[in-house]
Image (tube, rainbow, N blue to C red; front, side):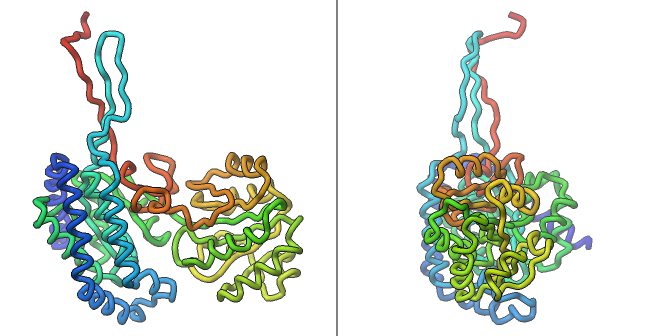
Length: 420
C-alpha cells in the first residue's frame, strides 16, 4: 500500500507541476500538440489495432457483455473519429484567458471575470479507449493536466494511446506530465488518488454506478459526475408516428451500450393501439427485448413483464422498458419518479405540448423530435466531451472546454483607494 501511495503521489505531483506550466502555455502550443496527436493516430494505426486486439482477446476473462466489448473495440472508424474530434477541438476558441464579463464601477475600477484552468483533473473511465484521447485533448486544450485511469479491460489500448500523447508532448514542447496514464490495474490506487485533494483539483468518473458512487463517497476534492443514464422517449398523442418510430429505434438501437441510449419508452394512451405494435416489431427485428406494463403486453404479446425495478434500470443493452401513460402529465410524473436527469425526448407536433415538456422536465438535455443519442459534446458543437454531468453544480450536460475551466476576477485600477 505504501508503494501505491508513493506511486500516486509522485504522479499527482508531476501533474501539479505540469498544470503550472500549461497555465503559462499559449493556445498555439496546445493546438500544435493536438495536431501532432492526430498525425500520430494516423501513422501508428497498426500498432494501436494490435494493442486493442490484445484487449479484445482478453475480454472474456473480464466477463464483458457484448455491449461492453463493443465499447472496448477500437475500429478504423473510431480511430478516424478521434482524429476528426482532435481537429474539431483545435478549431474551437481557446477558453484560457477569455474575458467573459466586465463591469466598469462608478469609481473607475474595471472588474473582469477571466477563464482559468481548473488545474489537475483525475479522470476515471471504463472501456472505450477512444475516451483516452478525447479526455486528454479537452483537458490540455483548456490548460489542465490530466491523470487518466482507464479500466483494466483496456490497459493495452490505453498504454498505446498514451504513448502517442506523451510523444506528442515532447515533440511540441509541452510538459510530459500534461497527460499521464495510471498503468497499474490495482483498484486500490484509485483510493490513493481520491485522497489527494491537496494535489488534484477535480475528479471526473465515467463508468458504472458503483464506480461513481465510490468516487463520490471517497473523493477529497470536487467531483463532476453522473450516476445513471436512464433516458426516456415520450411519444405524445399528437406525434408524427412515423417520425416517432424512427426516433425510438435510433435512441435505443444506434448504440445501446452508451449513457444517452434510451432505456424507457412512454406512449400516450391515445396512440398506443396504433403505434405500439408497429414500433415493437421494428425493435424486435433489431434484437431488442421489451419489458412492458400490462397494457403494453396486451398490445405486444412478445413483451415480458416489467416491474418497478426495470423502470429504474440503465440496461446499456438491447433491452427496453415500455409503459402506456395517460398523456403528458403522466409522462412527466414517470420521468420525475424514475429518471436520472440525463436525457429525455418528446415526439409531438403540438408546440404547446413541447413547451410544457421542456419546462417541466429537469434533465441535463431535453429534446423535442430528436433522438436521445444527440446529447453528446460533439453533436452540441463542443468538439468532444469528457463526460455528461447530471449534477447542477459547476457543470451540467456534456462537459467540454468551458466546463473544464473556472474563473478569477481581474481588476484594473488607476490608483483607487478604499479610504477615498
